[in-house]
Length: 405
Image 1 (cartoon, rainbow, N blue to C red):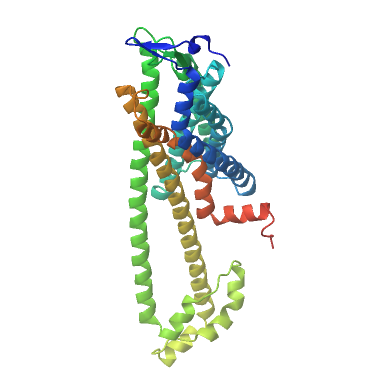
Image 2: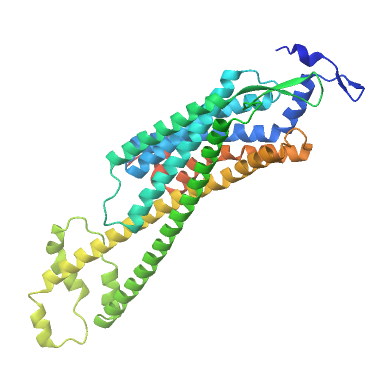
């Protein structure tokens, strides 16, 4: 690649400098080495992890609205790892010599698309979690509604990403050395203020901030509701334990609490006499009462076993709901933590215009902050693997580590 104007000697205040654009580019490459390594690592981990997420949640597990949103979120992250990240690496290798206008436009288009998809699907997941935790008895998001929401998010994000093409590309900029120009992927520079361009980037920024605030508020409400439910559950268990302690001796109470899981309710009546003889009658009951209990023991025991089974089933469902909600909360926190440094760095640079004048140390931290948003795409699959046992089992089955029984 040849830059005819870059081979000229620069002159500043009567002092002649023998500097080329290649040398200036090399200096910027060294500053961006840590951030480039970060992008390569997240790209590799995220590419493999998101493929596994799409395969397991989309084809191996029973698909629910939440899992559908998780799959679509993984698809967006996969686009980031497969297309956007390699483009970012090229820009870091040629920070001042990026003359590929099409690549720059494609990079910005997909970056906006993926960013809005992340915001949209995380809001959809938060809404679904809110309905399930706070309004369990009210109508929930159905699969049909989830698919409609998915299509809307993709279409809206694609439109916004397409608009970004109009205001982004390979831009020729002067350097500190007269006669030497750099080419980098950036927003187009207009002689007069372009309100359409300003409005587009302002809308994108405000929508991102609204998403972060929305997620914080919704999950705060969810956590408070979960805490209240947990306290009520503990209180209910204590009350039941007190009642059992008053009605039954320690031995009978222990046996009641150790009743095994029975999936076939019809089996309860068949096993009731055997269970009754094993548990025995409560102490302190008169002989007359014992004789009256004889004809009712089977029905009472079957009812008790049914209640125990239902309580256990409800408790397991509640734990699963809470676990999935906490998992989605962790994914949301990762998004917020990784986006904030990137957004702050871009705002500071837009206000101070200090990207070309900062020191080497400041430049390293600045570009690391700019690239933190890429971390989000690689950490989500790691969170799923630690939080979802079925996900771990399916991965083991896929690689032959564990065989299904």
